[in-house]
Every structure is written in structure tokens, then in C-alpha cells.
Length: 218
Image (tube, rainbow, N blue to C red; front, side, top):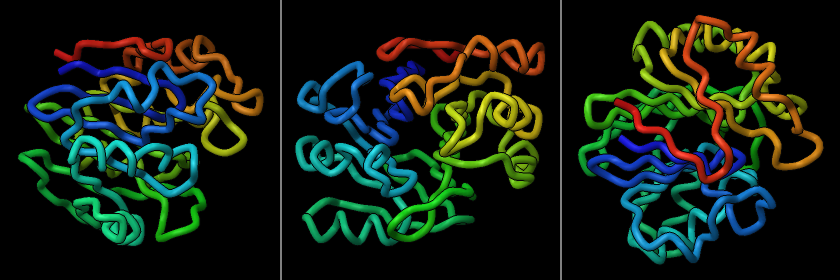
């Protein structure tokens, strides 16, 4: 399974299906690609409707025919634009094209519905994308229920967890590997991923990528 960080919270996952999460690209100064470069997508997941997460999700779905997955209210909005959508809510699980998607809690704000994280099960791997969130004890349930092979955790602070909280989230989730996200895009979220790696220590493998960088999850 190939994992590519596209900048900010945008992630591309390539396995049996090609999945994009929070594809904030065209207005993202740190984006590795433009939405025009995307020619294939099977599923696009949106954790919440802030512009730096909803991003280019709708245009990508329209161009590729991908199914949009998001909180109910975002899915309804997508459907009104002719996009094939699967709405869900926190605590729910759906199967889309053979990929199991679990929607989990995130503590943040948004315009429509509720912010969320997602746990994706595909090709015998389990990935947790926390979306924008603070540190929460609910993350211990991620460990108990899902045992993630890899997690995407924000470290930018101010609007999400910072380095200290994200390091604690690694402990709570018991994730084996972690890719820090939601940092370095704008001055307000300009934190140091090396400091995060230092604080995590030997609790997990911290994989620091530059936008456009990839990691092969075995």
C-alpha cells in the first residue's frame, strides 16, 4: 500500500482502491499537486467542511466519478451537485467498493454536521486519519477497537493538537506508525515534526514526509 502526503491534511492512499482524504490542493501553498493532475480516484473522504479540508473534493469527484464519503450533511450537499455520495455519522461503519470506513469522533468545529476522524480498513491494513481534533480520551477506543497500523495526526497546534498532545495521542491510539500532518502550510501552524518525533520516542515509528513524499506500508 502506497501512502502519499500531499500537504496539510491531504493524503492519497493507493491499494485495491485509490483514496483521497481532505484534498485541499488548489488553495494550498504547500500542496504537492494540483487537482487537475488527478485522473484516478475511487473514494474521496472529507473529515469536515472547513475549506482546508473540503478543498477540491467535489471537483475531483465530478472529474473522476469517485464516491464522496462524509458526514451526512456534507454528503447531502455533494449529492445536490450530482456527486455519488455515502453519508454517515460518528460511530457508523460503511463499506464502499470493498473498503470499510469507520467514522470516529473529533473535537473541532465546522459549518455542517460534526467534525470527524475516519478509520479505513483496506488490504488487511488499518489506517486512522484523525481529521482536525484536540487530544481526547476517545482515542483510547481507537486502540481497543482498531489497532491502527498507521495514523495521520495533526501537530500544527492553535487549531488542532500540537506536538505534545499529538505525542500523547500516539500513546493513546497505540498506533505502530504515524505520519504528522496539518503543519507547515501557513505560519500559524508552523511546528517542527522533528520535535514531534523526539517526543514520541520509541512508542511508534514517526515517518516525516515532505509534501509529495510517499511511504510504502508493508
